[in-house]
Image 1 (cartoon, rainbow, N blue to C red):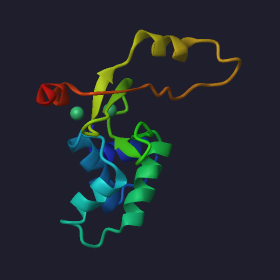
Image 2 (image 1 turned 180 degrees about the vertical axis):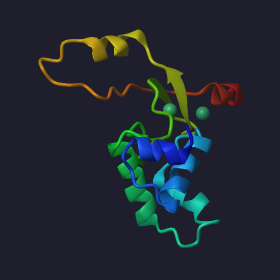
Image 3 (image 1 turned 90 degrees about the horizontal axis):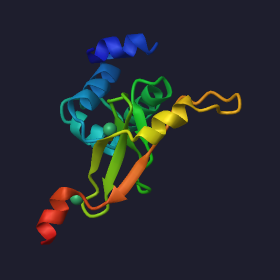
Image 4 (image 1 turned 60 degrees about the horizontal axis):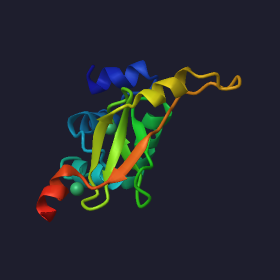
Length: 137
Ligand SMILES: [Zn+2]
Ligand SMILES: [Zn+2]
């Protein structure tokens, strides 16, 4: 699905700027922060404001079109991939990697939640990524 259709299917009014921000998330699977998105998009969209970027990313995550990650305590990161997966934060380079979801999370989704409805499960891992392990040697 392209950015326009993702917005429509999540009930989000597809303005030019929202499409551009959604597109950025789809094309950059690096889990960018709002600042990253703003810095890169404002080069080609000079009228874009930081507030618009932040509000749009917040809206995308509220409507389920993107994930808001709080794996890094210094900043909030966003992910255009909403399929079930988990995240690994490298404490050395700060990069966030995608990892497959462990079986236990699927069990959490399926468990009896005492009548509550679970719509999101966030599983975070922290450590040293394979690239940083190589350079340390
Ligand atoms: Zn690393
Ligand atoms: Zn991800």
